[in-house]
Length: 127
Image 1 (cartoon, rainbow, N blue to C red):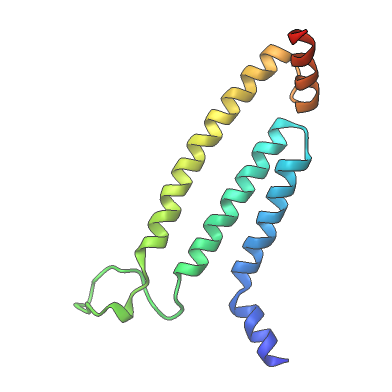
Image 2 (spheres, rainbow, N blue to C red):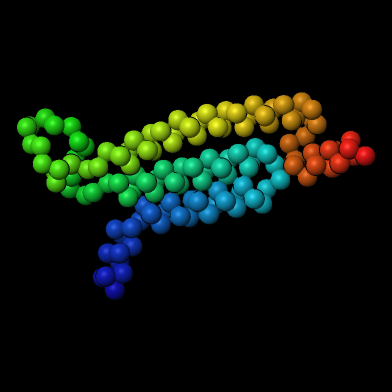
């Protein structure tokens, strides 16, 4: 029983990331509202960043900033996952801004944010 508890507690952040990804995936594919779809994609993005940060952190190590002259790699964490997370956040904010701008344009054109209604209007216009 202690082994199971140790495994769950040592992989808690990864488990939370997987649950958040599932919530975002469900919101993205099951909700017809465009704002809820954008929110689902943002939840999925955040879960991936949480997963990367959790995998990149090593308990007992510090950020790779040399202050006391110690240069051995065993003392520091790997900075690459942190850099990937920061880059991903910047890209995610940009993509979200573009999606929201397109959603505003769709609302101005079709006066609704429901994807099903927009598709019906498009089919009627095409005939």
